[in-house]
Length: 295
Image 1 (cartoon, rainbow, N blue to C red):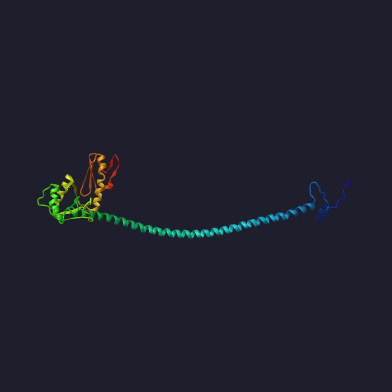
Image 2 (image 1 turned 90 degrees about the vertical axis):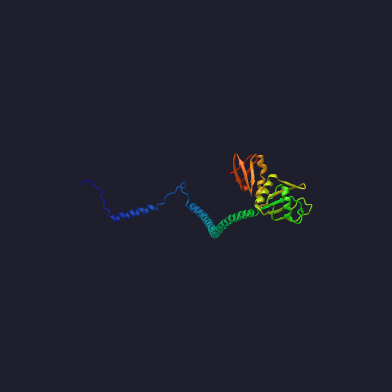
């Protein structure tokens, strides 16, 4: 008889599964020893979780409440910013309309300024023409200063016809004739120290020129110890320009410069051998040592 072999019966597959299930169930039901040093008691763990859970929930609720309040604040701020933006847009629109209106006004003002400048230039031109006409119309006039009030008597032309040639020592052929002669300004007392000027219009222009030439070269004259001056009769504007030119004479003398004042109001100046005529005192720039001119 051959060697003894264990008497094993083959196990079917369903039987093996049943045995495995029983073994697994037996193992799960076997109590496991718990090490008190490594694992806390079940009751204590459950108690700690119950205590910590409400605290965490409160904290989360507080944070949610805080975030909600912040969101509400942000909503309010956004609403306020929206209103401010609308207000700013309205203000900007108003500013734009005002700027547009100002631009239109500026354009109108520029047009008016240009028109005013044109009118000013036209006015200056017309005034210069009027001044020139006045000077030409008065070129036969002479202005006599210093003759006492009432010395002429009742006939001014007869007084000047007899007195003027003797005073300036000049014989006229034909005799002097006047278109008109009279005093200007309000009447003053007989003993006034400043008698009114006499304006005399001669009939012949060459006699006017002779009298003024003698007056420039040999004046002033005297009648009974009273100083008499004879000048040309100019318009008001021309007289002002002549006075402004004459005010420069002391400085020109100090600078040792040659000068001359010609009719009606023209200043002639020589600098370093070069001469120039000035028709307006504003063209001058004077200092204590030099005269700056456009030569």
